[in-house]
Image 1 (spheres, helix red, strand yellow):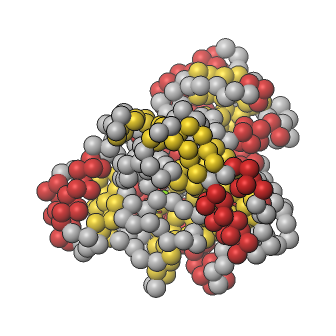
Image 2 (cartoon, rainbow, N blue to C red):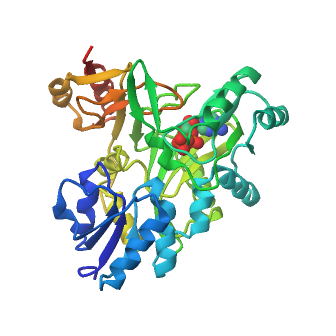
Length: 427
Ligand SMILES: Nc1ncnc2c1ncn2[C@@H]1O[C@H](COP(=O)(O)OP(=O)(O)O)[C@@H](O)[C@H]1O
Ligand SMILES: [Mg+2]
């Protein structure tokens, strides 16, 4: 069916498996992004544009079509390009989430408003633009509170605050976050990579009720009115507060069946309430004593640069990115995999201090650990590291993927790898 069809893929990725996925489905690929990937064999046409700029991508697409090129479907795996993909899909009349739905997911104030309206549980949320407003709304809610950018990612700026002094500091920190080009410390400097998550006209600061409870992430592919669960990921270690830096994921979930069902129902209710109709999703939920509460709905598959999808594939045999592409192609998804999911998971390994990387230690030992499937490097020798939570949440230098017969085997492989892998600094 899809042999001769052409996919517009907006933004590429550090993950080589992603770009080979359209090929494996027999698609021709038009890739729109600023810097073409090193392996030029996986796309047919490159449109050199800023993949986060709606107008620029649209102009390049129009040019491609005017020159006799074709586009039969549009996809992106990248949070920062979701609005661009929606705009192209709308203009070309192709399957995909609407621009309204993308806004409802990326603008977290809008997410909260819509979920509230639909009766889907989510934290009480206010949006503010000044310190005075932040202090005023804090009086309506009660401490502890969470402050975060209105549209963001990678936990950038997300801060738990216990009192007025902490609230003021967090507000000041977040309100300047999108304007920052870089973060510096002791003569070391890194770009503000998380700024691509900003959304036009959604640059306020959110003040939210703090939600207690264990956190879970659910990955979905949906289309034709059906919402198919790829996996529930447990987050087996509590988030490090007050900055909520992501830790390990493990799947399949060990929650009782009844709780898993409640998470799935709430997540699907949220997707419907936000108008998500065709695509992928990564939904973050906390399980409170009174049931699930939605923290965030991302309108794309979970962590395609991290090992979220690989962890699902190890566990279930299903490759989410392929099924997401089927959904935007308007084809039926195929979730045929293992009869029963097996344990898998991954962890980010975090750098411990600011400096310049000379190399890494413990690599061969970590790779040789039983259960370790793969490492993915997020930093290279010569790179600077600036540890500056919460403005700059980026401190992961390598990701580790593991599998095992039991959950304990997976977690012990991840813990051992985490202990072995160390950055070596220039000085
Ligand atoms: N209202 C809240 N109550 C408790 N924890 C929260 C709340 N909001 C965010 N968090 C924690 O912070 C993490 C990051 O927040 P999130 O809104 O998902 O930001 P991002 O888009 O950067 O991932 C969440 O995964 C969760 O652990
Ligand atoms: Mg999140």
